[in-house]
Length: 111
Image (cartoon, rainbow, N blue to C red):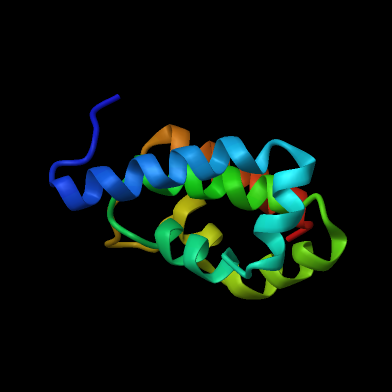
């Protein structure tokens, strides 16, 4: 997969990729969830860089294993997942990997 085009985008991409790895470990997941990063991750899901969005969805999926965080994510993600999975007419289609991850998160959240 191609990486981000700018240095700033590259830093964001790698930061979210590393955060995703940390979210896979329960002891880190709890700490990350307590710091309220979900709204920042949701903003990245809605952003322009598709690979960063895939990693952000991975983080949100891991964090959603905690019931209290799952509800927060559900409330914050809104229609963004719907727009990724089935883009409104005139909106560009997302890549298959992003659509698949969005669908997995949507199923996990019970949307």
